[in-house]
Length: 397
Ligand SMILES: [Zn+2]
Image 1 (tube, helix red, strand yellow):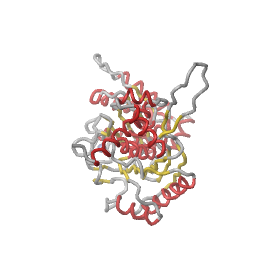
Image 2 (cartoon, protein in one colour; image 1 turned 90 degrees about the vertical axis):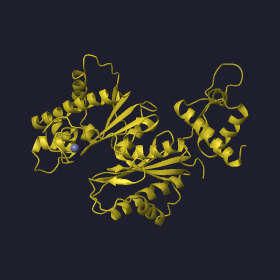
Image 3 (cartoon, protein in one colour; image 1 turned 60 degrees about the vertical axis):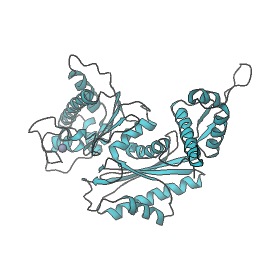
Image 4 (cartoon, helix red, strand yellow; image 1 turned 120 degrees about the vertical axis):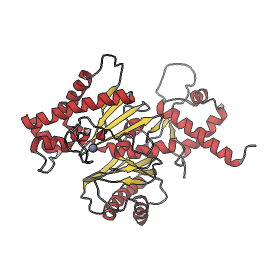
């Protein structure tokens, strides 16, 4: 027996399937959707109309053609009416973005931020999110939800925050106080997805980037530290305890340099802003900013060139290990250190190739993340869309 509840679940599943088809191949017509999905033309007609009414889809302009007869109307994700909010709590900044269903940036706000205590950070973040949310409303867009990338680990269910080592807050509950801070600013009833910032970076590429729907995908987020994210089977691979993808703490050298985790020889102790800075100035000086490193690199400062190329060689070694353990279709390099560009990336590619074994058959593509410093926030926004397309966030109000 099919109940009313079953019918609505079925309808949602079918609607999601149509959105996914159009996301991976824009311009399909109703007839194409019927063929691909196996649903009847009349069902497709009803579902498409509802998705158009709800702001998900629109009919694309038909370009003039000389062929006879009526051409089927191409459909696409509507970039004008729904929006996704994404944010990243960085180690020393806050970043908030709004983007559309096609992953195009609508607006972003980034500010330097010293995280002293949790509540002050969440108030500032809520104010930034609320500002963008109001702007979206003024523009006639409806927000689907808010994603937040954080520099910490989350349990395997994606619910409980287990550690925020770089923020040093005692209280790890961010969800309730952030929802309360948003509600005080009249932002209510929006789904909130919280995820690790490197996992968010992985989703930025998988949901919106040049590597859409390409998997396995490994994302390496190289900043003060080194994080990672894995997309496998159309979802973030979290592992047994939620800690999968911590490539930064795989050990590359026994008794190597001290890592932030207390061990020696981790990848992060070779490949990070901290490691490069230590290589230039020694461990007792403040960490050099990316701007400082970039300008000294342009001036061919030998200490900086040496430290960056060393990081690149180890990055190639780490990618070789990733290829041999995960065999990904694509490795995406992101995070602030990648702004140093070719001296780091080209050295890493050369090192990856030089370290290939005789029997290696990996055809892994290495690519730089296209979202730059917005990767974490864009990926957090992408996580909201990804959740909706996995039927975990409502499609309509
Ligand atoms: Zn470590």
